[in-house]
Image 1 (tube, rainbow, N blue to C red):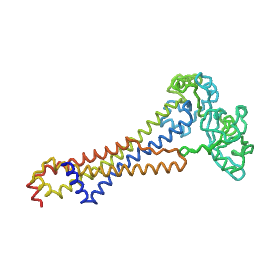
Image 2: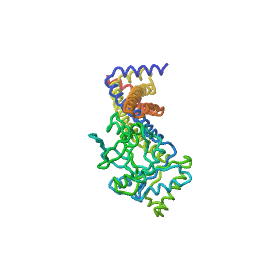
Image 3: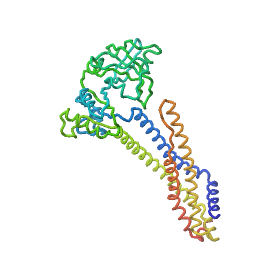
Amino acid sequence: MRGMKTFTLAFNQIKKNKARASLTIFGITIGIMVVILVLSAGNGVKGLVMGELDSFGNDWIDIEVKVPSTGKASISNAQSQARGVTITTLTTDDADAVKKLDNIKNVYAGVTTQAVVSYGNEKKQPTFFAVTPSYIEIDAGSELERGRFFTEEENSGANQVIVLGSGLRDTLFGNDDPIGKNVKVGDTSFRIVGVLKARGATGFFNYDEIAYIPVKTAQKKLMGIDHVLFMIGQMRDANKGDATAEEIRSLIRDRHDITDPEKDDFSVTTQQESVDLINTVFFGIQALLVVLAAISLVVGGVGIMNVMYVSVVERTFEIGLRKSVGASEQNIRSQFLLEAIVLTAIGGATGIALGILLSFFIAFGAQSFGLDWKFVISLPSIILGTGFSVIIGLVFGYFPAKHAATLDPITALRQE
């Protein structure tokens, strides 16, 4: 009963100072909303990336070039390749050797490039996937809509054949059937043999705008190279990923005459390693953003403390009067502390509601652009938001409440 009376007094006092209370609540609301929004958006993006990763299946293993003496996921490796450092040691012969390993079912190798492709008056500069023919057997997300993929014979003979993504087909041909027609890639004529089904985009990468050509054709007639940039192996038993990765490393080191693993000019990554890396990256980003949101909550908490100190000064006579008629220090402290907690609780509840609402609109907006973005509000984010609001109220409300409770009643009564 006493607790309910204390709560009523606290709530009535907040209502008397609506403007001041609203500004205080607003600061807490923004901080809690950001916490909910960050965790929800992070889960949405993570789900998007993981979903795309799963679309490739769980039995793949990635081999790609790497600058020696750098980590495969390091900034130095990325920067070196961005500055034009070219690793030319990985070849289709390496892919053929990898394919002979016991746990490898299939392999495709390739390079990527860009070139202008044209038909009549229509032009486009898509990304070209120059790959070996086994690509279509391994990549679970790629399916033919019409025609066929190029063959091993066409790859070996560096034939000028091309398979179009559905979006690229639409741009160049509209509703016309492109099979058997020729397009220009630069100044070179390519015959269209197939079109892939619509697959959609991942982030800024649109699979439907890709063109596929034999890797040998790209090497000899477009790029003037004899190496590849990557290989994707398909495993027979995905549970043996780590052992298979080590076999591949040993095999390619022997083929490249590498005795020191630090000098590897390639990297091997299993799907599980990719998942672990994604989890680590997203955890780090979310943790950083939550810390930033927590800082804004601390600022809001300082605002609450200042508001409560002002309230104590304004109500000094009231405090003295209550203490003179028998109110204990605990009664006074509880009332002011409860006022601070009520302020933060209102801000927390509002922030949670707004965070959930904005998260829904972000998910809805992403889905309207064709992204597989799931609306996710996790229980930990709600608990975290609620916990933050309660802690802020307790911590920053305690000192003004303590100050109010220790006022001398005689001195306080003289303040009227």
